[in-house]
Image 1: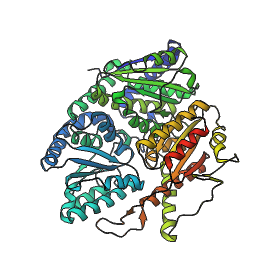
Image 2: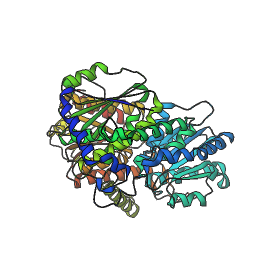
Image 3: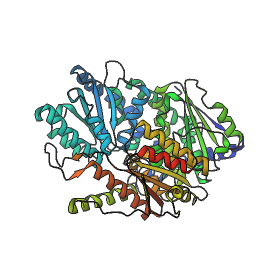
Length: 567
């Protein structure tokens, strides 16, 4: 079964495509991936040889579907109607994408994902959950992610208060690696079930494992159909025809790696409306895998499609369309005619995203090989975590975070960092005016995620592109720390980082332990420490960062910043 059709435009880029395919053949890249040859990436096998479990996920998970199915039928029979998944990054993105694309089937559970330490986000679920009918799925590979364990302690205590300690555990399930702290806790607290994933699968490569398939089954997706499409893509990827260099994930990765080496490292995605959320999963896979050792491919998702004049010479484009949809066809042709590299991918229906997950995992692995990096580690992520932990320790010792003085202040907005302008209204334009060739802007929003906030952030993003012709990305904190955060610190250092923080209307204490009310930290303080830690890690890595603190009305403050750029 062919799960996708691929075409590359324009004809003027044919030489690049042929070079990429030649490198595939001469380097025996597909065969070496199939053989799990770590030397394709690095001489040292660490964090490579033990990170290739995703290659066999479609086969292995086919055998685990009955276990998942029995679990889902049991929770449905007991009257559960909602599932709140507690997780971050690779543990939560695929479930969120599946819910947004497929919805919840009649008679199955609806699903939402909590991946924000913002107190408003936590309270939003607290105040509308029917705990009696809610299943909490705690999802973390390592079993010790600070955000996920904070969510767990808070919602376990909430369930214990409302249901009693003896019943709370039956409302929880875990997805984690064998032997993790969460696996042990699931036994001690009598969780309903603990799904122990293959430990050789990294978080961002885990969509086709328990991390993606258990939530998919809970909302009523046909997981057998999804995994069969993935298996078909795997068979096609490693067929003799593909090893000769035909269109495949490997060919796509070789092409993208080559283009990035030529300066076209802003990989811009457009999707059929029915599958647009898939971009969020791709963003993490590509950014966290390729952004390191001074190199990287910046994925740009969610951006409004414009004509060629809106884009600089550092762009390449991927159109992924489903079911004969022709969304953006005219602009695709215009981009190609203007000399921008364009990849046109076609799939039959949303279930072909199973095949796309596998195809893009291969493409990302091959792009990493072309860039000379290890696409399976994340060496720069720990720096921000360490600095956040230091801030939290300071707070616990002194009862407050270190004060910071703004360089400029106006009603509603305070500015922190290198502000060369004399007025707040000119700060952002002055900051972005530093952009060198190949630069990009990253908006890092440590604010409550809401539809109105999202609209305001998109307005700011488009204002940046319109005025400076820069690729601009948007991420909510701390979620983006587990997605694009590695690339921000590990790539060539051309990013301009705009951090947005805001006052919390209310805060929420984080219990120090399960089953106990004592708290030495709150979600608001954790979020502030994470924002500081990431900002300092960027500065330490030589990146340029400016922070705008939005008082009172964050949405209004974001709109005001967009207006200063003419947006």
